Image 1 (tube, one colour):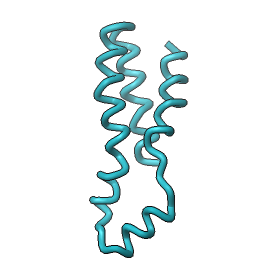
Image 2 (tube, one colour):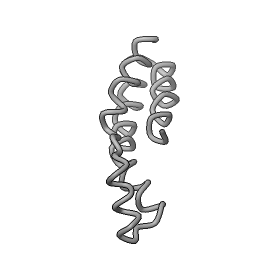
Image 3 (tube, one colour):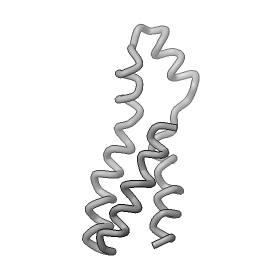
Length: 77
């Protein structure tokens, strides 16, 4: 089960890379904070929508819970 958490921790940041210059540009261009967050969280939501049920079905509910608990940590950092 630890391997599931480690793999999730390694894959999740690659889906939600946020550049500070992009966020700054979007703010200057008039986009609100909600729009910036939603735009950058799409990759993480897609990952969790596939990974949580997949791990739940393949490895059991504990693995699905680990992926669910580990994923949002990267989304909001």
